[in-house]
Length: 281
Image 1: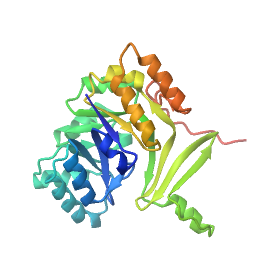
Image 2 (image 1 turned 90 degrees about the vertical axis):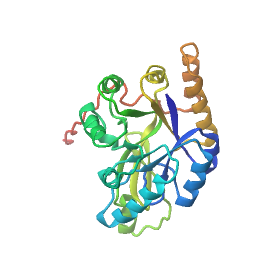
Image 3 (image 1 turned 30 degrees about the horizontal axis):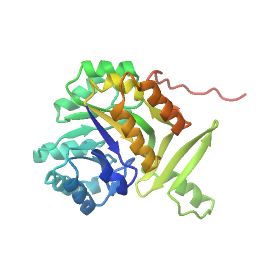
């Protein structure tokens, strides 16, 4: 088992062993850097996964192909992808690089996981919307190398549209920020509206430290998402995961509860149910 961290800043990367990072113009929901910065990071790190996880238009495919060729010459651990175009380009060019299917809300069952595994996806980043028992069921029925996020804010929604910017423009409101929040039913959700569109994160921090004790023996890669955490918090969380055992688990969970007031177990023990609310009378 390896802990893979989504960094919260470039400055903190040197303190992390294995990271998942993005490339400007090609990634969402992760810290992004330019290609020249990425080269330096790869040279200094033992394990760097690169996320190319946005939806690409036809006009972007030539540039995407060039980027994949450049990445194939770097010693990266693998590429996370959402758009099947990435897999098709790698297969067409017969590039030897590990691909991780990371379609977020779609990576929920071993039938589809096995399909993409047969077609060249070395690994799968499991959805955060499946339960602990479903994770174990997938583990037993696939040869795909699995990744699962067990700590951090969860990306809930992404769109190429600029939802906030369009709203502000419509009402002639001037705001050059890229970070916003929305309040709903007493909860705060972080919203990013940047060059890649709009992304919304969960109101809570997923805390799967207890489940980690069981999953670390059967899931090859556990992901910690540093988004929204400061550097000190992130390093402390990683330390708690690395040192977790049956003897100190309760103390470690108490430490996390003292650090954060919005920890939840997400869907780990609660099935996802989509239900349309009744219209108010």
